Image (cartoon, rainbow, N blue to C red):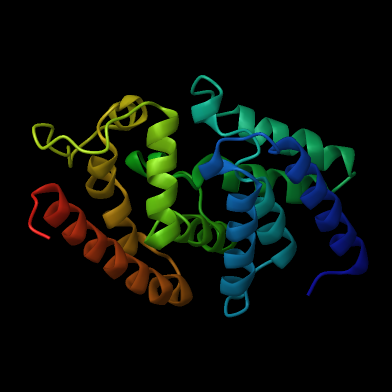
Length: 220
């Protein structure tokens, strides 16, 4: 449960994020944040965690995504920290939120895990759930279009052993992204609730790919 003051901080943060991401790319806009926030609150109901940290991190996790800021992986934590300091939130909470933002992304998992907490596990699951299923498919193609990528090229095979730098700089067709990230997320979930929801969304993506290839090959 949040205290009245914490609830007010969350409300102010929600407004700040909505305004900041008003013109963001459609897969990383306010509605992405809103869905991750909702997922995080759902998962947190069955986990022992600091709900204030969970909600702040969920709201701020993409406040300045590195992929839209020349790959700067510190601009997100720095922007979130500056906002939280303006609310006079305690330093321990600010540092925790920054650490979650810094380490929760899929690309961060390519190296050695340097930070984890129950709160990060919850927000990470919430974010990964929004990357799979029907909305995950829509987000993948939306971002691929934003970057001018092909839908699919049968002559460009997915790379299953990418390094972090190769993943960050990839320009492969969007269908490859399913194999290089999206279909891997089911087995990377941290919480029972996350795993349960992920299974259904994973299965939906598999059905989608079956239909995609059938249509591509003129089979149905």
